[in-house]
Length: 234
Image (cartoon, helix red, strand yellow):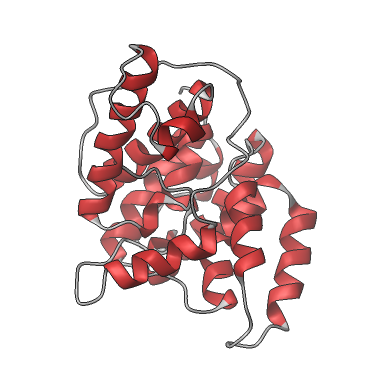
């Protein structure tokens, strides 16, 4: 039984659907006070963090939707709003290593597992931009001087935990506008029309155009699915 902490975009189809199934199992154990697996490390880690379980489920559902899977089983737990478990079974960097071993000669996730700090940063940069421009600039500068062989375990933990914080409406629009620049020419759209779009509409258009054009810069971005989770209902 495993609930990952890294972005679901890194999971292949089997792992993505598997985590979705196991998360529902943990929710059932906690809500219904079942004894089976009640002492499993993942159950213990997530006990009392109903809101975080719900958010992780929403992240999984958003990634599933991007890949063409429909989720019809929402999670309704709400305890400790805004708070995530402080412990890990494995730190985020180690989770990448576990998947790297697991995925040898197998299907990969939507986002290829990072081998350098630069790759990890490229995957997360728009998600970070949506949350804090200052942090975006600082991390960008730090990563620019790192060498391919440099350890990026601390960076992996920083971006993983930063993506647990809700972005502002303005922050999301700023990040999406940056992303839009990569796909705006794929189908012609009047600039004035785009400015009137809701966040959800802009997100949907970016997703559709990114997948249709197979733009590697955006199809390997965590923001392509995770920002959807934090948007207000249209």
